[in-house]
Length: 338
Image (tube, rainbow, N blue to C red; front, side, top):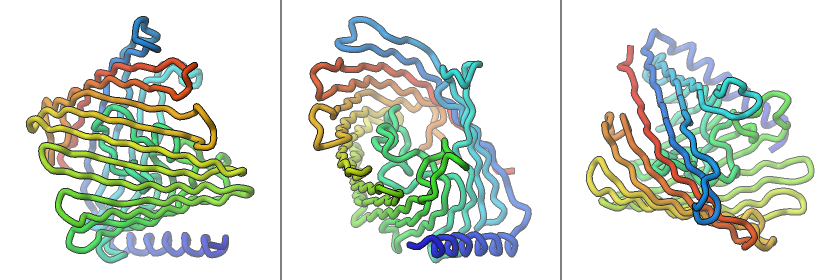
């Protein structure tokens, strides 16, 4: 896609959304939401014989504002407040803008256009619910950022058989903007099919052409949900840089729901950043449970206890394994629209 074509496409979408918003703008309703994750973390190398770190921390303090101008035009802004040990955060806490976008429904059939800082439609990252305390594979290994600036088209497939998305993003993620963003946008495509109830299969592509190289990412996703089992699987392949480097990753995450409020969680990750290089891959094994003390509507967490043990094992025998014990209390709420 040529530079002029990109400019024309983006301008057209922005103008269309603006015109649509102006035509349908009316007093609407707002809603305030808060997400707080308080965590106790223990870290140790090797066989967990001596602790390297042990601390409490506020890992997430989301403040979210949502406003519905009409039933077809809605917006969201997220601010993330978190514990931090970085020199740039001398008071022990950091602040960042995580989301900020507007949804326009009705412009495209059975779908919406989203404009702003949003989740990328790639792999499991856009619908990751933190069933484990750990991030999704592509987020944890810094393959794709958990949010980015861009424009996306989102459409449902008829008869509830899935969805598809197309997007254009900066490609550098939510932590970089203005002069820290290069002139090469990233293009994404994502699709999910639900051929039968309880089975979801899909795939994602991300392409970004740099000046002397490229970034091409592929992901395949499968989910089998048949109570009491809910199992996720993901396969990722990356091709980046010049000379080209090929990476490969796999995630498998089974969840066993013992009752409506208690579930056992397991997860195994494998990531090899360069398949042509020896002894640079690692495994990540996670086991634990989730206890929903209070649930909100549609089964969303209200007050929730999560306990995970995580072990990262390196292919290189000279590297010590890394262990983490995580115990997290999450409390999340939403006001009634006002």
